[in-house]
Image (tube, rainbow, N blue to C red):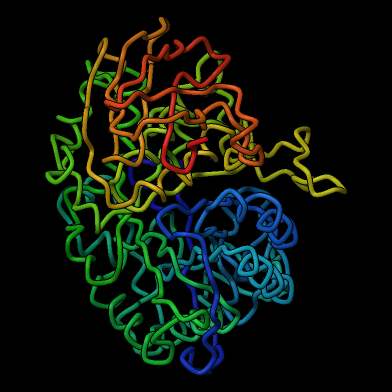
Length: 510
């Protein structure tokens, strides 16, 4: 969680003495869902995730979940305390115990869902155990730099990152304290070893990959050394796949994102900003502006300077950006919400899942008014493992239009973007080769038009209006495509009651 341009960034640096078992000795023949779409299950507890993987996440078709940091941390009563680690030998966290984590991973794997862990190797908890508790009872003191795995010699000096440093001082951004949290020296072979052991311990439990929080606050070469050591022990995950890695790097004048390509994909925050401006119609942008903003198929980049798609992980929002209403679209921030009297948040996710750019991540968290509010204490699920809509969790991953587009994305993978057409400035449609078609209407008026869908002749179910668990033959909105691939459609306007889009694809043919 990088605080540059975001609200209240807190993160942790991770490591534990872990298990040294080689992944290659225990490959499982796991048949996972396609990996092109994952979901950030922010702050969800392990026992709840085990149930949700089986009942919804797997059946929807998500390829992976990204879980919150699993190490022992400071307990401060805010959402961000899980990003202030105390003990990397302990996996007793706010989300559950090590045993519960292992059981959840097994349950999600059985549901064809990978599990990625959010980790940080940059810094540790502030304050001390004299004032705050930790999730596992460990003691620490940030003044004397005494932690279960670390002492004074394992940290950078007590310098502080100033706002101007993000424009011209990469060394301070990497080596100084952010929010006065002790900054680990990742160039130290000992610190690297702790990080390696922590990641190995998670891989031994079945973890399939990692999000590296605050990656730009660490030297890309140090991260590379840590990953190389991890991959020496685990060339593959215990499920037999390459270890997935993505890195949080908010672009600024101090860091070069391309330096980090050698380690894995990079979170593309410029994409998040582009969707914010296009769907909220800010600064003169609208949906018709998108090709100029982010580029076009085969020539990505545009005025927002997007990275190559194979280097990028994209999302409409994450838990950081949603806490500042001007940083991204959001569904959970009650002070400015893009699902109130509008469906532009859902519409932006439909667009992301329809477009073949980057690895897509949906975000699912909880509702809040106070940006520092902690996660709800209530389980998101009732006694029958169904969503409890009174619990305070937002269940975005289950939203009909978003959930149904996960399989659209998988079915259209590798297909070009064709037949791009605009109506008004806030109406766009395009096909994905001969495998899919989507029309989006971010205006209040219906869009009536005969579209070239690119699809073979037939009757298709519009998946936007369908629950993920509803069979296609029970579809309520059917689309007829003629022998030339044309379909006459009425795409609803955005009244705030229905998602103003239509999407059909090969898998929705009746």
